[in-house]
Amino acid sequence: METPCSDAPVCDAHVHFFSPAFFARLAAEAGQSVEEIGRRLGWRIPATCEDLAAAWTAELDKHGVARAALIASIPGDEDSVAAAVKLHPDRFWGFFMANPAAPDGIARVHNALAYSGMQGVCLFPAMHRYSIADPRVRPVFEAAAARPGTIVFVHCGVLTVGVRQKLGLPSRFDMRYSNPIDLHAVALEYAAVNFVIPHFGAGYFREALMLADLCPNIYLDTSSSNGWIRYQPAQLDLKEVFRKALEVAGPRRLLFGSDSSFFPRGWHAQILHAQTEALRDLDVPSDHAALILGGNLERLLARGATPLEGGL
Image (tube, rainbow, N blue to C red; front, side):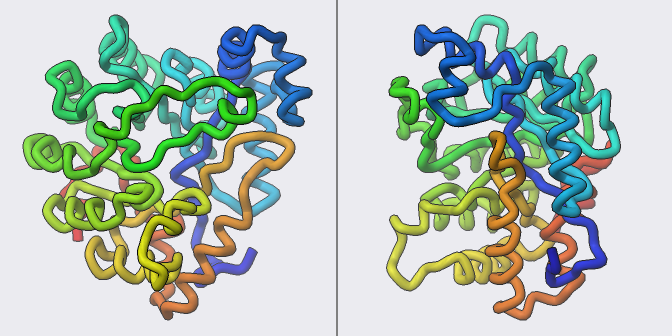
């Protein structure tokens, strides 16, 4: 696909790794077999993590994507992504969902970072119903600070899990814990940690921009269809979202993401198309577009990366 900088590599900051363990968890909640879940969804269920890793590698090849951050999308599934990263270390970075409020949550964070090669800790405060300022979360930031090249991804704003909706499973999230402003004091205290807010704040765009303006270690990922835009004033569209994000955060703190997740859909090429069109319409210089579409993520996840290197 031609982009505003077609000679520069595209790296995806946001791909969900829906492993066999992920589907087994859903099946158990739904009281059905994994095969029944697959039929209801119309999705292809991977036989093994190795098969899923091979499928994602083929998808990246097909669409000309250099590397992707794979996200283990349930707590406790970091080993699934670790297996994919071990097989294809030149194509994948490993991210994992953590629940620091769970009894084994912090131990899992330490093990994943120390022994499994993971580089992104993904926190979902609204999903797991805790404040990002809760003292139970501090060890996550301390663990990330001890390993430069590790990021902490904090989901804010509107949170829906489409697969759960399709299966009629409840999602008892609490949006009281979804405001990016809650991260302000934490980001200031842990200045050596790079934080990523996905989906431009997913409805808290203004607050995400405020946070990025105040904290140079805050990055915004551009992933998904950004359907949250419908909650904003009518004049705001994807092009204007990029314009404001570039104005406040600059080109060095935006990370392209697709929010791809399941097969047979595979890699969500339309997301890249829409975002590159927005960048082209804004006449974003090719070197800045190259940073957004891949260079920033590569720099951020380089072992030894620091906020100073990734700042404005």
